[in-house]
Each structure stands twice: as structure tokens, then as C-alpha cells.
Length: 192
Image 1 (cartoon, rainbow, N blue to C red):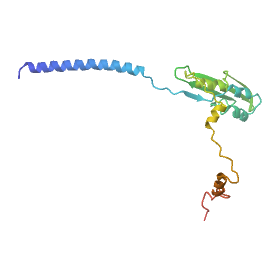
Image 2 (cartoon, one colour):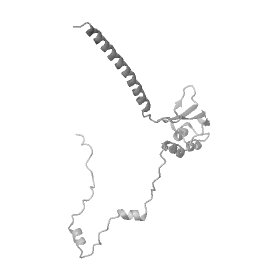
Image 3 (cartoon, rainbow, N blue to C red):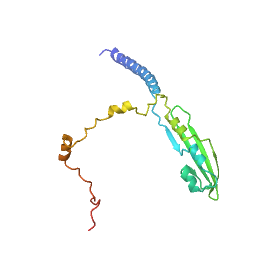
Image 4 (cartoon, helix red, strand yellow):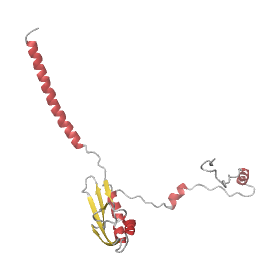
């Protein structure tokens, strides 16, 4: 073997390592750009008790705890240290929008509603409308059928059966429809 062979082999190895290292850096840059452009799907997170404006308007001072619970639902926060205070907290987190948070505090005295305070609540219709906004403002389809549209789906009626018509003969020869059962079998076997 010639003395330059090991030196050439080492040089080739070093050059190969340098090329591979530079390729890795390029690959990292490309992969970082690719991963940065692909965003994962983020789920809309709804937490807490949604309380509508109509519900807040329905509660009146003097109501007992059960009546308030029937209208507003079970409170999200009920503290042992503040037994006469219920807190209703609602948070909605959506991708690309600031989180919405609404709070309502209900105060009791002698198990009767004394007062309530908190953020202004949206009506139920406003809240539902805000959920539907996804940037799609398409045409709302008409939900009423016209007479012409209904005629498309109507089926022709069979001719009236006279005393000598074939429809009357067919009806007379057709087996009678099975009468509904007067009693049903038991669901469980009788005990022995």
C-alpha cells in the first residue's frame, strides 16, 4: 500500500463528515420552517356554567337557594368559608381570539337571595350567534317549501274504488291486516 492511501482516506472521511454536518443544518432549517407553518388544531374550550341574561333577569331577591339553583344551575364555586356566596364562572377559549370570561356572584342571607353582582351576561341568542362565527358568512337557506316544490314530491293517488272496479276486487282479495296484539309476552321469565 502506498503511504498516501491512509491520508486520502482520512481526508475523504473528514470531507464526508463536513458535508453531512452542513446537510443536517440545512435539513433543520427546512424542517423548522415546515413545522412553523403547520399549526396544530386547537379545540374550543368551554369551561364553567354559562348563565344567560334571561336567567339573571329571572332571579329576584327573596328566592330560596333551591329556586336560584333551578334557574342558574349548580354553582361552579361554592366555598366552605363563604357559605352564603355562590360563584358562577364561564370561560370560552377559541383559536385566534381572546378568551372570554364572565362571572356572576350570588349572595344569600338566611338562605334567601340577598343580591347578585357580576359581568353583563349575553342573551342566549347572542351567545349561540357568537359560537357560530367561523368566518363563514354564507347564504342562509330558505326553510319554507313552496306549493311547486311540494308538487314535485307528491305521489299520484289511486283511482277511487267503485263497486265493479279492479281496485275493489283487489281490496277484497287482499288478506286482512294483522290486528295489533292485545297482550304482550312478559319481558322476564316467571319466577319458579
